Image (cartoon, rainbow, N blue to C red; front, side):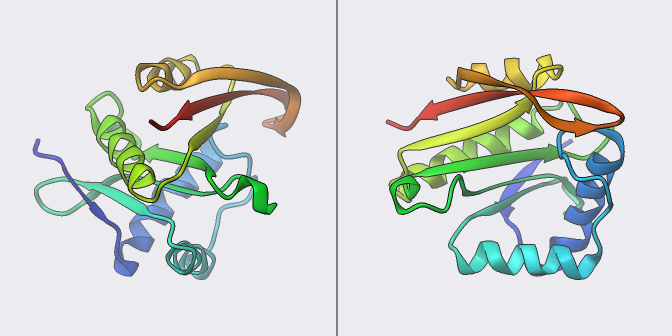
Length: 166
C-alpha cells in the first residue's frame, strides 16, 4: 500500500469525522462522550484554518483517508503562544502500517517552520503503544495527571509528553 501525506481539504472533513467518531465511541484517545455532527467537524476545520494550524491527512493510492493529525493552542494565555498540543489518529484497521509516523513527522516539520518551541501530547496512561510511539520521536514524559479524565465508567490518568523543537 502506498501512503501519501498532504494538507487536508474541506472535502476531507467527512472522512476525518468518521475517524474521530470511531475514536470517541471506542477509545480513550478522545475524552468526548458523544459523536460529533458534520457541521461541528466543519466548524473545527475552519477554525484550524483561521488560526493557521495544520490538518494533515494520510491517504492511500486512491486518496482514501487513513489517518489525520493536527495541533492547536495548548493554553490560551499569550505566554503559551509557542506551545501547541497535537493529535494523531489512524483509521481502525490501519494501525502499525507507519501512517501515524508519517503524520507526526509532518506535524513536527510544520511546527518547526512555524517557529514553535514545543509540542505537547496528552495520552491515556493505559495506552502504552502511543506512549512508546511518542518516545521514538523524542517526546519525553513530563508528568502524570491523576484521574484527570472520566470515560467508560472509570477514572483515567493522563500522561503529559513533551517534545522540544530544535
